[in-house]
Image 1 (cartoon, rainbow, N blue to C red):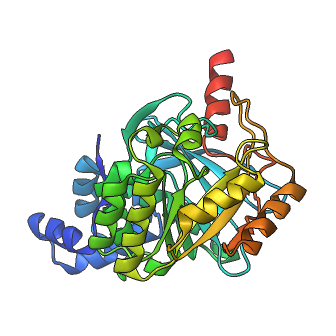
Image 2: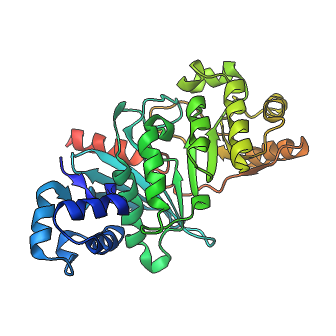
Length: 346
């Protein structure tokens, strides 16, 4: 399979040009086309001999749009097909403070969270940094007329810290001044809690927003819904988040899906407060988005706000997240799974 040009940063692209006998400034020209998500036929300022040489080994774009669904609130869920035929989802989320894109970092997922549709067909492979970046570039081009993309969230299918090297490379690509140049503080990485990689992420220079998918404040409950809890205790995970804050001085986010009758009681408020004591964080409450093949039920929206008030009254900073795209297979993996199922029944 050909290497996509968006896997290269400017320095590597310049090295490639020199190795092909071209002047370094060709890297500037090609990088502009990469960021614009142009196909080769738009490279009109590049010599045809160079384009022909590039076509032999390098792909102009690593994915194409297969389908999309648009929600009533303006959110758009895209289903992309990679060069190898894998399906990957991304979501455009419009905001008056700057549009964001939620990207996937793996084909499938091995984490096995029972409330998530991403891993229904298992884990297939990691995406390259360029394949992750391409999701941002495509949507930025597609939504250029309404402000493009200002923020990036790694909260789609897959566990970013299980694809650590490509995640770090992607962050460097997406924040590069010679690329799309999204500010580091406008990049958010979500993890289910791979503790050793949380500490490594801070040491490797990430100072954006780190979000932890907690969803339960005790090991006993967390093990019922998240496979990662079998390996890392909640205490270990929160300690790693504290180290991240100590290194970066960036407040972390605790993602907490509210499951009706499971983790939304007054007793859970006490446990959450105790667990998060001493951590500079904000709790993002998310009423469960029902998915296919999952029997868990969300609490009511009213109860979500009641639970939020209990947390705030207990001294824990918390808000209920605005839900977007729920009317069009809004949860991670749903559009892909339904598309695959439809293709099998035809």
